[in-house]
Amino acid sequence: MKNDKVKTTIQNLRRALNYKGLYEKDAPAQPWSLFEKWLQAAIAKSDFEPNAMTLATASKNGMPSCRTVLLKDYSPDGFVFFTNYDSKKGRNLAENPKASLLFYWPVLSRQVIIEGKVKKVSRQQSEEYFHSRPPASQAAASISPQSRAVTDRDALTEKMKSLETKYKNKIIPCPVNWGGFILQPKRIEFWQGRPDRLHDRLSYSKLKSGRWRRVRLAP
Image (tube, rainbow, N blue to C red; front, side, top):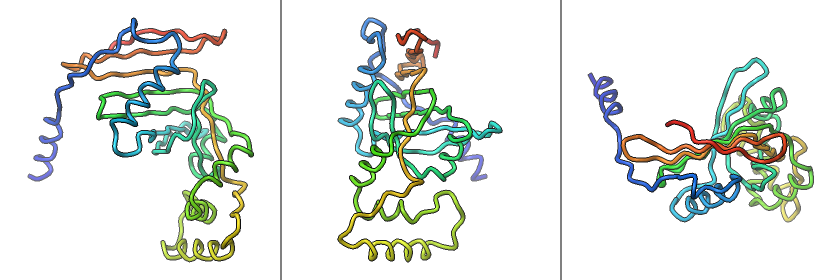
C-alpha cells in the first residue's frame, strides 16, 4: 500500500554527518559568542531565513503549542521577537511566561535550544521596529485578528486595502496589541551533528551569580 511505502521511505531517510566536533576546549565560558558565531555561519550558508526559530509555549493548563517566528534582536539580555499580543502565543505567554526557542540549521547540522522566561519589550522598542517594517507589513499586522477565525481571505484583503488608503502617505500607528517579547535565557544548549549519530551537546545553565555553568550531555 502507498502508506506503507511512505512509512518505509521515512524509516530509511538518513544522511551521513561528517562535520567537525564541538569540543570544550573550543567553547567559550559563556554562550553568547558561540551563539553569534553559529548564527553568522548560518547566515553565510543558509539561503532562507537563518533567523527562523521555533517558539514553544504552554497555556496555564499546560497544553503546549509551537510555531515558527523570526529572531529580530539578541544580546546577553535575551532574544527578541515580535507578534500580536492577542495571538495564541501572546495569550500563552500572558498566562505562562516560560518558553523555549529552537534554531535548526540543517546545512550545518546544528541546532540551539534556549529556555527561559519571557517578558514584553518596551513600547518604544516595539514601535521603532514596527515602523521599520514595509508599509504593507505594517498594514497586515494592523488589520489581522491573529489566531481568530475569519470569514475568508477576501475580507482581510479588503480591510488591508481600506487601511492602506486611509493612511496613504501617512504613518500607520503601531497597534497597542502588537509588540515584542524578549526571552531571557536560563539554559542554552548547542547541538552539533556528528558521524554515527554520536553527536556533540554542550549545555550552558545560568547560575544565581549570573555566571554560566557548562556541561557536556550525552547524545
